[in-house]
Length: 120
Ligand code: HEC
Image 1 (cartoon, rainbow, N blue to C red):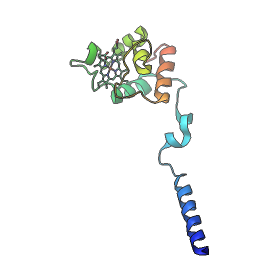
Image 2 (cartoon, helix red, strand yellow):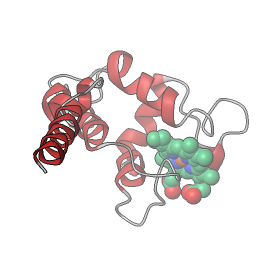
Image 3 (tube, helix red, strand yellow):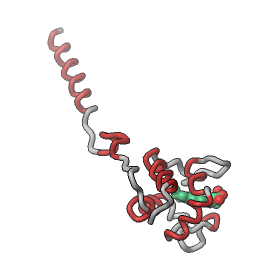
Image 4 (cartoon, rainbow, N blue to C red):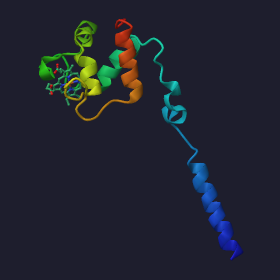
């Protein structure tokens, strides 16, 4: 009887400490590591697009005729409003990327970047 109580206790303890283990900064600190202070194209936006959009919006036959390979091309859609519209699935735009919305952090960085005048 006592033994099983001890084993149950040990198991509960092990499960609870394993729940405190994170190897992912974002998971551990949540939005705290989301840097929205001063996003620039070079530091934040270009890597985000290269990771999530360029597969379909590269330079050769881009989807929807929208190429997102250069700063000049990205600010065109940023100022037209369809960049944020697609990423937030607002204003009747189809969601981009079609596979699922990017994280709240990335959407905030994009919004801030556009509000700041899309600095390079
Ligand atoms: C799996 C392919 C795919 C990915 C990945 C993708 N797109 Fe698209 N995108 C499309 C297609 C197809 C269209 C044109 C048809 C449509 O509007 O649904 C399009 C259209 C667009 C348009 C024009 C919308 C309009 O109506 O004016 C914008 C802006 C856009 N995408 C931005 C992005 C951004 C930003 C990302 C990354 C965050 C992204 N896309 C990722 C396939 C993709």
